[in-house]
Length: 414
Image (cartoon, rainbow, N blue to C red; front, side, top):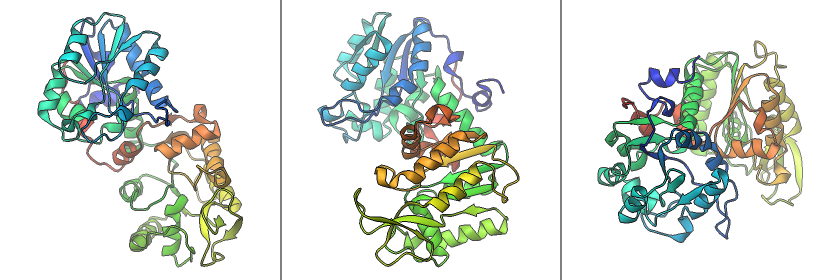
């Protein structure tokens, strides 16, 4: 399939289709990067992810203006949430001058843009310093629209939110398009919900069933196998009558878990759940641990990771060695860790799954911040077909939820 085919079918232009020379291009990026106590960036992957779009716009001889949010300043200016660190890092990566006004709208921004030289990039200050951003204010969006001739969205992690810079703003700029990162996300995820190559296996983890209900529902007609790990698996196991001790179980969702398992059984859809666990008495890195199978957990046991037999079970499924699947998976979706992988003592299951997904012959898509962090920690990111930059956005996309920031891009002019 030609690049951009899926975008065009949805009435959305790619930045590659837009006439850029001498245009003021406002790029909505996602520079919401993590900072340490000294306000230094600890992970610049979100900035790097947008570099191909930035370079394309700069080579197109446009005047580039970048905007983004940072954290949750609740409509008030705060040094803690300034984009200054992102601006410095962007200047290093581009090896060019990045100018920053003290606000994203107003006289300072207007003056800088009016006097912008071709080799300069402007990064506007945090959009969320204005309450109008999260309120999806058309007045605030219009002030941003006045700064540009072309709008490009490359902030996939934000398109599920009806905020001014991703929802109201594009509708006010006739020439609007998706950046290369957003284009790739839309194309990969659309294939997952429309024409995935079978066998398709979904691997879901994380803390809560309630966070993944809609995704599980949307996946049932598409997948040929469902692997469930992490704390959300404990609710499914408890729904089968297995005592999980003091492990995290959503007791108010036991009925839902039982219902979903019943639907899978009706469809003859294999569901792979943990059969053993790493358990502790308290969640501490140095807490004594033990391996216990289902039915062996005591009243004070807390499951914190999948055990060795479960690792073998899950990796066999991902590696095409399970008799319950018709061959090796051709598509694998992973969202959510298998345990508290942030602590090395409880990371073995998540690391093993990360390596198994990477070594699979399938097209592999990893979504969600924790899962992306896990493949980075395992050192297998280059072996993953696609790592999604949006956690909540990718889940809502897969669940078929409305995407205000994508809908707003439709119907743009060249």
